[in-house]
Image (tube, rainbow, N blue to C red):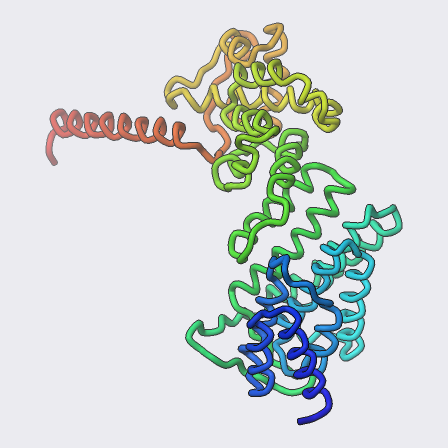
Length: 424
């Protein structure tokens, strides 16, 4: 047994005696048997554990147990272990130590080759460097540094996406291993999701600091798309639900609220909380329900005014719900009844003056929310197309009814043609 292995085994035995946790005995067994694949999973499980009874020095664990065998582990899994240790340091209230530890590993990997042997692992690592930086109430210089790292990381992510992702067989007990820095990189579907989720989480948090809200919203949607395939829960789902709701309401050119309200469970984090009103406000906007919107704003005036983002961009929000109420009005009408009078539009959108209808319709046309023709003389708008939206259950049932009506009408037309057209 070499010196490094002896040191690792001694450290694991000491931890087992102190912590009375079978995980250390399993890792010791895998270490002695050189079962690196099983050891990797055991270490990842230990590092990812939220067991508060585990009182251990994760840095010492890494340096004594993992560091001596770094070259024998899959680089993506090793990067996950490194970032897991960083998260433990962050949880202990030391973000600077977390940044330093992960950055040292990044620098070590970069020093081995001019081109990363695994772009995916470098994306994961650098994304976590950004995440840990952003946990420290960053100043302008740190934000600029994070911006540069994210730009570099995005290029690496594009490279990683261009490479084939090889799914490891779920029935396999071993992983192909090489030696030194020439390890083949096997990336499972779950690992691919982890890598993308890490990048978009870092980008999302960066946009939360610097804006604009529509950029945060975009990154948050990407993050939610990937985190659904990643084991574990979002660290602060309720706060993310608040942030993404505020971004949706205040962001420029965001009109498809259904992506959050109907396609994802994140908004349910606000149910039966002090932010229930914000959830209701999002649902009202998604439906284009002006009456409900007005009622919520009136009932929860104090909570609304306590949100600086809603107060500062109240004009944007008012325009947004007015446009969405117009879209909803069009959507609810059958295709053959989509010639709308200015009076009807004014009433449905709660505009103060019919003179405001024309600018509203022009705005909706310019944003691509509807397509059609406006007749200023007749004071009518004929709509040929309305933007696609993610629908809720009620809207889907209404659409199904329309399809049923359309099928009946089509059948009648077919019967009429069959009866009145002379056979050829």
